[in-house]
Image (cartoon, rainbow, N blue to C red; front, side):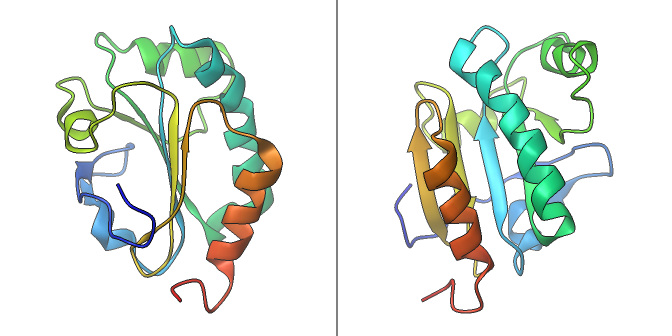
Length: 142
């Protein structure tokens, strides 16, 4: 993944039917790769809830876990975070296409479909928030 280039397209389902990432063009898309065994990932989950609350439908959020047996979904429900959109990548197709080797990984995809921000490791709120704000500006694709 390269800043300024489109990320790999993928099909995901967060509960409302299969959707292509490219179909979300026009709004910033936040993509977070995480797992229940990853402590920094778990620390970030509330931040994504905060982002969802602050930005509402001006952004799209996708959290991705490649754990099996519904572990990620169960974790979100148990910790009262079931409002976070989760796509379960149990065969790791998406993780492999993004060459995810360590987590957490978070991207902000600008409305034009290009990567505007990439974080490997635990997020820092201020820089992440600034990246979202930048992606919401009309000239975010330039």
